[in-house]
Image 1 (cartoon, helix red, strand yellow):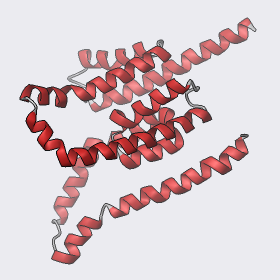
Image 2 (image 1 turned 90 degrees about the vertical axis):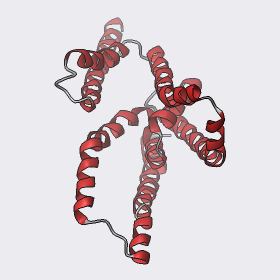
Image 3 (image 1 turned 180 degrees about the horizontal axis):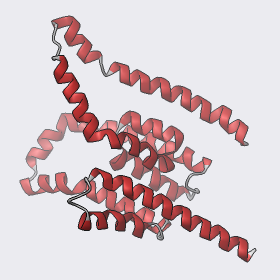
Length: 228
């Protein structure tokens, strides 16, 4: 498939469908609020709404900008629409895409990798919905039957375990970049923890990792040209 066919048959339809679905979800999110207002006349004070918006923006504003940039190279175009539509990106969608691309042995960032990632995320969504339904029905009973220590361990260590496994996967594929990805936030934590807010660690780490990747890539290209 050449670039023009790829643009017409993949990129444009994905953008069209993705924008419609995301906009539909945004609008439908207001339906419960609209129902409470029109059916019962319940509406929070305006100052509460403004304060909540400011608080949420201050807490998650950087994440709104950072996550699309961070996740897009691994998720691809349609994978980004799927992931941001359904959530649980770091703990479910991103690991699924990364593992599927690794098993399929496709080049990260390529057209094949994007198709593989989108299929993997679809499978992840189906599994997530299935287990969420199961958890809604039997989750409370299951957790109630487990010892307290086990429940505490699940709450505390499942997410770090997922990210740890994901880090190992990328370490094997891109070992030269990992020292920067780990070293920058570690150094910030040790020497600037009282000065720099923790959410800025992500910003500095992303910038440093991208810079390291660009430098390594240019050196590799220069080496291949010199050998050729």
